[in-house]
Length: 231
Image (cartoon, rainbow, N blue to C red):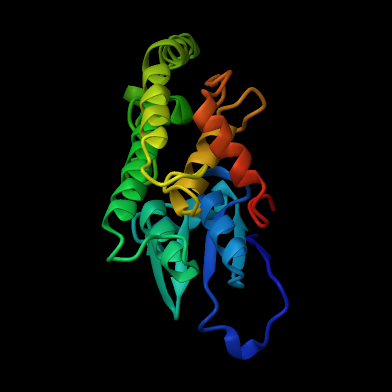
């Protein structure tokens, strides 16, 4: 059964209190949870099993989690949810902050790009699920997964990390974060990716960034000093 983690509330808040549903792991939903915690917005943190998701696929907008329920409506796609909660909590730049908005969106997109590289290793399949199922004819055997992990670690990931390092360092505003001194959802998303791919990470089995370049290491350290980042 789904497990809900809640803070005290009145029953009258049921329709206005956000409900985030995801697997019982940090995964791609942890930056969203961190947004809520940092912003001081109370929310229902509903943890479900893979079996719960399988049974509920037909009722989910795109057959997957995370989902966010607001005022009785259910929304999905982690990037859309992260931006929405970022706006709720002041962690996503306003329309007037063009440079900051573009920098944040660029990082969110590049994290999505990395996730796409990792997807075959996650699923042990060339393709993600179709209508909730993985296709047997595109299943990857352990030897193939081993080769993919090696290529990700040695060919695909290192240049991408260098690009992200260079981009973060290019900020015209002084400070440790993507947009200088101001924490945003981009920093939370990068923190999750980079720590999850660290030597003791839990993001993708076998894939590892053994040592962060200095600017990204500074960002990770700065994010971890923020109250609410670590649950």
